[in-house]
Amino acid sequence: MKPTDAFDLRLAQECAQAFSGSTGLGCVVSDAAGKVFFESGYGCASCRVCQITRHKAEDCVQAHIYGMTEAERFGGKYIYFCPMGLTCFVSPILGSEGSEAKITVGPFLMVDIADYAAWEMTEQMKLPDDVQAQVIRELQNVPFVSPDIVTNLSTLLFMAVGFMNNVSASKRMLDRQDSDIIQKQVTAYIHELKSGEEMPPYPFETERDLLRAVRQADKPEAHRLLNELFGYIFFSVGSDFSQAKSRVYELLVLISRSAIEAGADSVQTLRFTHQCLNDLPSLTDMDSLCLWLTKVMSTLMDSVFAYLDARHANVIHQTIQYLNTHYGERITLEDMARRVYLSPSYFSRIFRKETGITFSAYLNRVRIERSKELLRHPSIRLTDIALMVGFEDQSYFTKVFKKLTGTTPLHYRESRANLKP
Image (cartoon, rainbow, N blue to C red; front, top):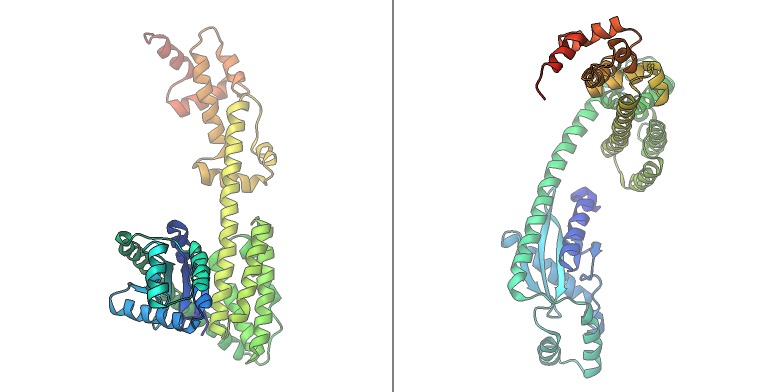
């Protein structure tokens, strides 16, 4: 059994690491049989007390399995002692078929080292002095936790693992739904291929369309095209799963390159792709292979979305800053698009999407607002004001001013002059 088949190992690792980091206690993630997957801090996997005292490590494993069993019986948490008399507590991790793993916290001491040595090492285990000295040195790594807060810490672990279990259960349900959708689309395309008289060549055009959809961050279209490619791959390779993996590997590389071309961070994308390749050998069937690449592609496309959102925000910020300081100059949409390194049509589209109005309308608003400040000075002629805020003639200035304010520049000036200071 692989851990990711039964429960979300990555989420369990994050939970254990967070708990260990916040409490200073060691945390171990292991399966129901005691196989250790992850350790954070000084946990049972690092403890050498058994080794020093020549106790079998299997005794500790059995103690932790017993702890998990009792935690199941007592509602999800249990505090117990390991064979060396050190304290631990545990909460089970739920998988698709019940408790599949556990997070064990410990070992730690609830008494000072001197009391532990006097009772456990001398009275109980009857260790010779030289062995006791070795154990005491090892116990310098073991934290002390006062008995009055151990129950509270056990409850915190129970709540953290409970939250993780809920997230994992929801994730599994969504995965099943996604897998069903993917399989329906893949199966439909395979039936379409079977209806033909002969096997068509590899659909390079579909592949190119997929990469274009990734670059444009068009998720629905990308998912549809990917499922068509899945259908062709599975139909063409038959039962040769290793060949299907090779084709999927090629697609992963192409998709990651397309995401980088669209603006995703190259270093992070390449690192993420490398991590994904490590997951590929653990996939053992067509369903998991489809769902895996679909999720990887979605993650890569999300990184493109994040890039585009950040870039759009930067473009709009640059544009507004420029218009607020250069409104008196002749500014065209083409000039501004060139300044932010975008095509005029694309710049026009994202500016309207982000601000709610067209570029020319926004520029006119800035100019009219500046003209209002100048109209407060009766010594400045209307013709000069029009030129100062970027209008080429007074008549057009008057037309735009009236459209935006409901009155003419002259009437606005007169109304301001009649106001008491």
